[in-house]
View 1 (spheres, rainbow, N blue to C red):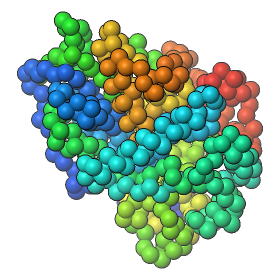
View 2 (view 1 turned 180 degrees about the vertical axis):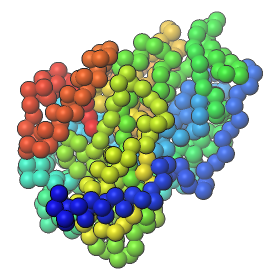
View 3 (view 1 turned 45 degrees about the vertical axis):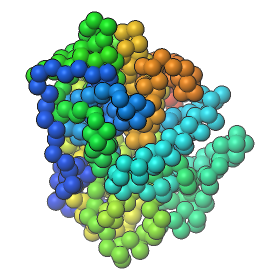
Length: 475
């Protein structure tokens, strides 16, 4: 290794010397105390299992639909501690993990899906205001940037295709000069600016605010109360917990990456671990050096992509790239910390923003995301319609979980709505195969995606086959 390269690597390593292996968002001094665990028996009309965004929106929307409905929410640890408190805080309108995925899978429904997604984002913004949730919500939009010439051409071609399909409203193509006018990185060669389809927010504060809004409407919230099993009980259902039971007329399962109480649903998702860094607050001079005036979210266009954004106190969150799947689909706390990925992310950060050399990272963390073979949520019911579930958001659940909550409530009500009529809601993705085939397939796909990034985006036979089958693995 040349001396200059060795020096740069030493600086990247030094930037991590004081990084705490905990999620930045969850260290906020406004973190609320957890609610007591359930002890004894409780009964309700609707039991929601899971205290992340999916469960919180389900409980809140259920009470707003019918204030007289008795709703109980169970959380196995603390509200917002898992993916809902660890993500990048990108609240996207897309219900389909982006327009390319949605257009490829549901071309006949894509205009409707886009309309429903934008409406859902508007309703999130209105709900945050209505309930007084201070989650640093900013409707800034997002820029997908190209860092290679082939990516720039692909973004331009994609924008033309969106214009032809009538899907480019609010989406602007930026050439190299225009994108660097928005954010000054020498690596940016083009960008696609979605001006109204994405908001930035503080993810943990959103979860905590939704919890408070639920409690204010009368939802009974029990934390440190894992749901152990589910069974029919008379005309309803019963869930056992370590210190008690809940009997409910209906149940919404919102556990996402954690094992579903319905065993037949488990094969549809696998956990992947995502990692992020957070810098110290930037000075006015450092902010000026990168020219990030409009505070948009950013993501690059590689298969193994990064996402990055500014926090309210002008730190940069830098995450993504590695997506780690452990054999057997295990979810363990020790997987939340991965120094080798942090070093890789630090290298990529300073390659993108060399003018920020010397900036230190204060936090480095990871967490599990539930992905499915179509990358976007799927839905269903069980026990003669008394149980509904949603899962598989694949990292874009900050906004889409609210839509998924309404789908679950529609399904439990037995209603045919504009949501339940969607093919996306009516049909499920293909399940993952058992081990060792799942791990082998995911590993081969990740290797192939890395090769595609290194060879001008050219997809090998394995990726082309996965494309034809509508399968794959999204980093």
